[in-house]
Length: 413
Ligand code: HEM
Image (tube, rainbow, N blue to C red; front, side, top):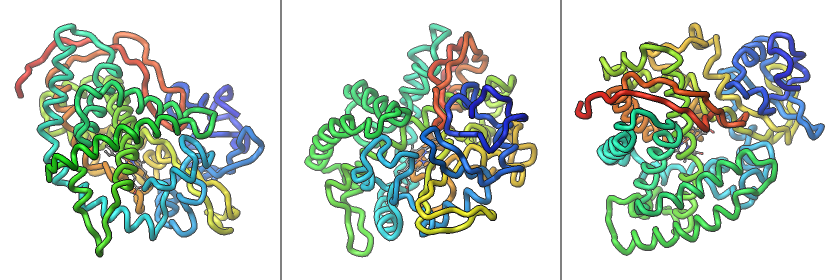
């Protein structure tokens, strides 16, 4: 059952949270609040007559994320259909789809290359990219925030990280759009063709960078990283680059767009950030909590078990609703209020907090901080100039269009 019925009145037993119509005006936070109180391990009916479990409380999302032996990412993948986006057999090469011990080994090697220093080294390049992106629209006094800011910055940073040349950005955009559409497609396996094309391209990029031998490039760092005598093979490096395009792009784009939309819904916040940029890191953390753009991932029960008194059968799918956990009243005071003065909110925007905790969280935070520092200084009076169009999805909280106007602020900080 979907949003035709109000969240207060709907018979919870009938609620299918994966139905995108519940999300037409943004995540249904009233419904999540009811579920957390009345039915936190919700038997979620699905249109094909089967069911999954929708888990909405912070404590349960955290506990399940940490129990990878009982709740697997490998067994049937991280979406509802095992072959959503890519065939499961192929997708299992991606870190997101692995369980320990395979995940532990692979992640340790990646962490050696993908360090806080990797992010630090990118900061100047991120600021230059943000500045150039704003420069392109600032004199016009109007733009589409999604097309002109939220899309180009994360995409550009990602290609910078991978060492992909600037002129190939439009092609890269096309591929990442293909992956995003595949996440929403009713057809399984919808991104295989995109991944094949992208793999051919990335292979050539990696070969070139190996020949150049720049020790600071991510490719060379990944080749050098070693844990207990184990290294990544070149095909594994290629797969990791594919994962970055999958995991690091839309997530940051959607947080940028919904984050700015949230600031506009709270008049004065942008000016406050402009007047005191030291508030930006806390504002970014609250934006992450409040928007939680990856709304859920799936786990599959590896044995019969129980969650808060509900019997879960081996093979059952369990959806971890990060977007609900990030607004759990057990953890957050006044969770529906956007408050940039919260102290270090333990939100679930980067996942449940277990082994799969977002590997790119440091990069995403740096990118968002620099973006909102520059935007609040240079566009302090940014306003909505038309209707906002939402991504029709229960999985991603994102915007497709957001027309805005502004008058230019100072270019130099
Ligand atoms: C605001 C932006 C971002 C959000 C909201 C986000 C969110 C997430 C979430 C929810 C997960 C799953 C965690 C779990 O299962 O518990 C994840 C995993 C991951 N993310 Fe991010 N992410 C963001 C940016 C990035 C960036 C910029 C990169 C890299 C360039 C990245 C790379 C990854 C990788 C590689 C994983 C898999 C980790 C694993 O399975 O061990 N993410 N992210």
